[in-house]
Image (cartoon, rainbow, N blue to C red):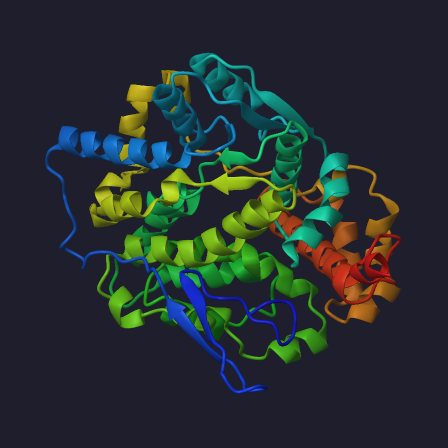
Length: 463
């Protein structure tokens, strides 16, 4: 499924086998085939690894081999450095393997709680280099968004994708073509906050037959203003995930924020469509896994493949002719981590447990002790800065009616209400929804109808 009617995307881990007919004019034989699939042990069959030192030695060896493979190139290899645990370990290991530091690139967010450039500078001092810092102010993020949507060929809700888009532009501008980056570590090792949140919420379901967490989910959806979201959709989503799922139960809360903005026609056209069904997951196999492994699998199939390796990853990087390489997505590394019991990934409320133990060997304490902060730019960048004319043009009644996706009254009502909202999850959900509206309108202008705003479009560029 893509945003373009009649154009389908391959499912992650699949390839298209094309056989042309020998007869002139004969139709080609197209077959969708699987070349690789994630798998986990049955629940209870995982490796508990009683010898912690042995596990650390094996993890270190596997990760070093993965980094070494991705340093092989005919051109200099650089690295994205966020200052977080994952990219910092890659930078430190690369320095060990090469005997000299990689050039690193990081971005500086104009936001007191989101900027990690100080942590990135600590990593640079640790390995002995001077990072290239790309400033990402709200106006920079807004300015990059039209180029990002064009590269992604789809709406993009995560504004940090624009920051990574700018980072790839900076790598290209300095003559580099290959960059290491840390995607995959959080997906395989429960590094996202929704795993910790879900662990706390699971305490609500200790009474058999009383699904308090489901009721809490439904109440929260209603409280945040997404009143069109159906309770039956929650149950169908859980069935599509083969049971309890941390990614779905917590992260999916944010995705319902867009529903409040849909037009009646858009809601009717979607009907009971559930996108998870398109992934063709082996539910019987998934039901045999530990619930955490189901959550890791689900997030990797959707969040990793659809966002991190698409809009934030390959499409953003290749738009600037930069090849991004992912040591944590190595097949050998995944196989090692997949076999381990979840206690080595989330212990208590400490995420990426085994990786943090390994990081103590490679990084200074100030980088290993902190909790993960999600790599993102301010979601309200479109509202904090004085928006350029194209934002108002895309959100005008005329443009919203032209596309038909969104209810103009709902969009304008929430835009008026948003500045007065207190900071918190409710405001965050509205921010994400509004960015989704702008991004969808921008995609429509770029690829469908170039008359919505004073911006280049595919049709005007082609002419």
